[in-house]
Length: 187
Image (cartoon, rainbow, N blue to C red):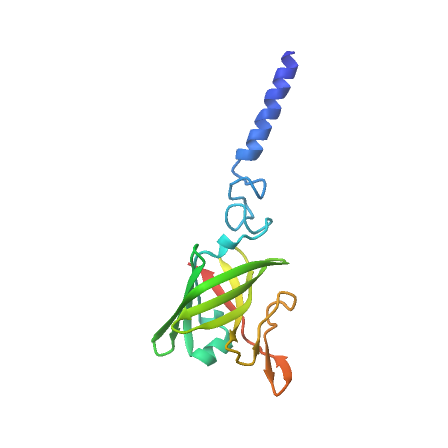
């Protein structure tokens, strides 16, 4: 009987240590594990949409050439709020800033760490941007989006096509639209 009690106590302690340990042994233990981006999210665990809820900045070499050319962008700050609203601020090379606001949706594409992203802008005017986001790690995401409403001959990238799959349509021809991937750093 004494051996059974000792064995039970050892097994119970092992179970508690696996659930309450500091290593985050699983993707549902409520503990930040060694490879997780946030608690039970990312790394060896599936990403979750609250991973993106943060302030992200792209500037310098991290800015996509397309955004530098189209918006004279020097710095872009994107803030994704828990209530699914966002603020995007572009500071141009003259130091002037332009802010856009609206709501966003994220959906896991099922392709490793790639999520679809839709920005439904309502300020300063109504526009829709669609694209993809790929988490590199806890502090770095790659974003590729284009305006899809009103239509401006841009075809949004797809998870299947991966980063760099934006296309443009001209005179019935569809061709790649390069240099549209931006790197954002969590702030």
